[in-house]
Image 1 (cartoon, helix red, strand yellow):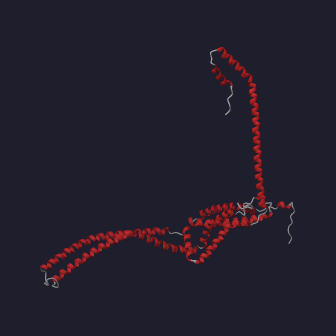
Image 2 (tube, helix red, strand yellow):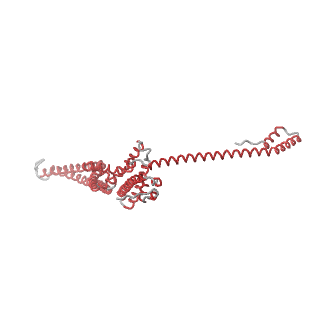
Image 3 (tube, one colour):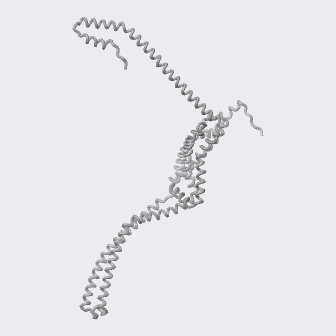
Length: 399
């Protein structure tokens, strides 16, 4: 198989494809520098592939996460793309911070590893929910039954004082009515026994004693009827209160049932319970967690284990050059500013000296005129004349 041989002049025409440039961008490589590093071009393309895979995985994971929340494809897709872009930015920042000078530094690598593991662990949750979707929904149905039972128990416990009080009152009223009825029954039996001669005086017929027992029976029976009417009203009120309490419980349970759902947190809870009750799912769960976390760690791992080449050296030297040029430019700018200030000072000094030289004769002439005027007046004090000279002839110091 014949290999193509390139001359030195032809190598300059070896252009990368748009997709390769995109991979370089994902790997945070500078195109104008990586273009001349033939070995590192492939290395950074590999790193770009790992970033691309993590980016797509993060977008899909976040899409499924938001879909479980909003249950609409378009909003979930837009939010998934948005969060995937954030993960892409974080991954690019992580691998950009790994270079030939800090690969062996433990603290930066530890921080990047912990950040990647945290993000990867969270992103693994939606993927696991998708993989165990059927099993999780079965577990959710079982959890919902348990939640309904717990809700019912809580309602019963909350309403127990009122319900027990009503039932105790109902029992007391029923017992009181029953006792009164037994009293009526005994009075009736005593009256009948007195009239047929089987009890009491032993006389048959409606005699005086029988009439007395009859009156006593009728009196007790009348009291029983009054108590029965009264108690019936009270029992109906109690039954109405118990029925109202039962309806409120049913209404509360119906509202609670409507709140039961299969949202993200509910599925996470179902997954947790599924793992507690299923040892087979546990091993696969932790294996999948490891694989999905490694997907997030791929860019960091790839950038760390790949050897350093000419690109890193060029980047370091270019950065050093830019620093030296920055220092040099600042030094030159400082020198120019100092030269300007010094030249301006000399020119201003010469101008001030020239100003005082030119005004010297005029100041002397004005002083003589002032002294002649003071002498001719004769009565002005010297202090006034001196203050006037200071105000009109002497220069004020600059602040």
